[in-house]
Image 1 (cartoon, rainbow, N blue to C red):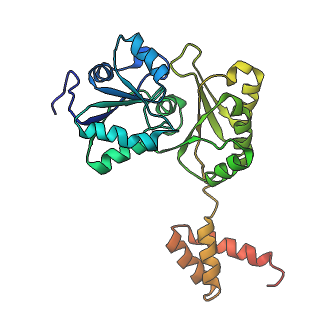
Image 2 (image 1 turned 90 degrees about the vertical axis):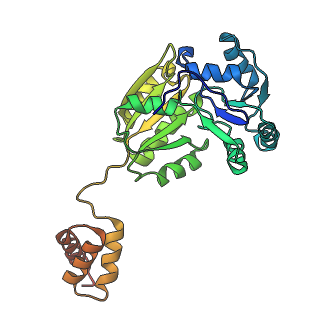
Image 3 (image 1 turned 45 degrees about the horizontal axis):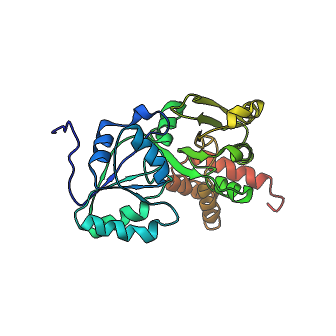
Length: 291
């Protein structure tokens, strides 16, 4: 495969350009070359991006594209791309679209057949996951949890038995409440890693069972300041526990078949041990006064 040593700009192309989440040295050479060369930079906050461009001595036209105007402005940018202009999409920090604006523009480009070129680069979720010491072969990115406790607990309950590692972003003023709700829903022992201020001066990564982590955060106000990522251990099923689906199937089959046959069929359907289902049903019968 041919490797390119420098950025090649194609007209009528939208470039997705990640920017540093803290340490400015994390920007790639290709990202700088794209930002220098494009006709227009679509930025979440032009003032914030302006400081980044100034630091790297890049003079470029900017266009504000944020959550409140993206759906209306996507067509304007799409028209420029169709005219052959090149546009770089950036967010305030990290990879655009990851909990940041850009989805509507990218979808419009894809639907219109306009080329979209993604650049690899900084992403707080992936950086935190890589250092968390939790399984990373399968994970589930959930963005920010709901702001209110009822919605937050509902969201967590829907994920209670999710076996993949969970990734959340969290804010300073909601961290304690979120950890308390994680403890309430997932239990004291669920392991959670708090990755804070990644790539910045006060970077810290600390993991513990959520009950211990909550106490640790409460000990020092500084531990809940800054940009934060929570990496939560996935659900681990008790190997001795029988799946609810298997028990429901067993109950249905028992109504029509002898217990041994019902247990054998339910075990085959759900891939569980026949003896375990049989013993479960016997114990249930023993505790049922009607039998």
